[in-house]
Image (cartoon, rainbow, N blue to C red):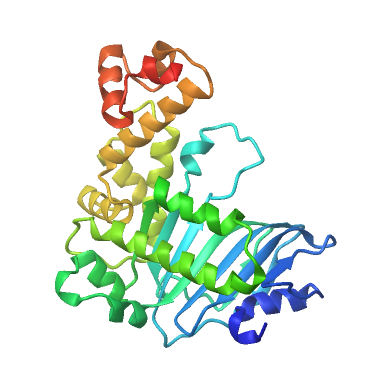
Length: 317
């Protein structure tokens, strides 16, 4: 194993902890915490970092992999590891497995905070490399903007079953060390391809450049929606909370999440209904009333539209 096949930041983390890597894997020493971190540099265009650990304290670490000139697209998979801790308020909604996809202009920190609680898969791909792979004539405005990487952009994509299958193979499939680098390269490229295919389906245009303030505001709005699923979102109030006009809020929310505010709310509302029926064993009426429905027939129709079956039948299967 040579330095060229391992991210420099991972080698730096190992040195900071006074340990070494075994087969691309750093096991966190007991005196620092627990868990592991794996990293692969497949070539000059694409790299993968898998991190699932807890540290007793944050560890600031210079990031030697930052390239201020090179345009990079990053894919950050979050909430993909099984959560051993039970949270109280709708964790399945607020921590739903998803992927953040953005340009290097959003992700150019010179210092990485190695946080006490980290559970992510990070993929970084050279934008010029991806740009070379796809024909320009058939690209959507969104995909074109992302691959051009000339403005700050961020999108979030929910992890769907086919994508989850690939993620699971990366996290848990036993691999002979002889094939390890090759296997992870193929799986990483498949994840990138599937995600770009999903983004290609979105119809937003034009695509607007983002700044950190706008991103934080939109995510505050999303958080409020998730924690008040019993109340339909009021665009005017949410816009005031975000500090932007209703038009701008609706535009940026749909650009980031690929769905309108109300449709996003209704989808997550039905996911929570499904959880209450299956995991909390609530009755159909209790579930409907908890989520703000006064007409249970309407609740049943909406639930079937999103989940594919009536709530009573869903609760029995």
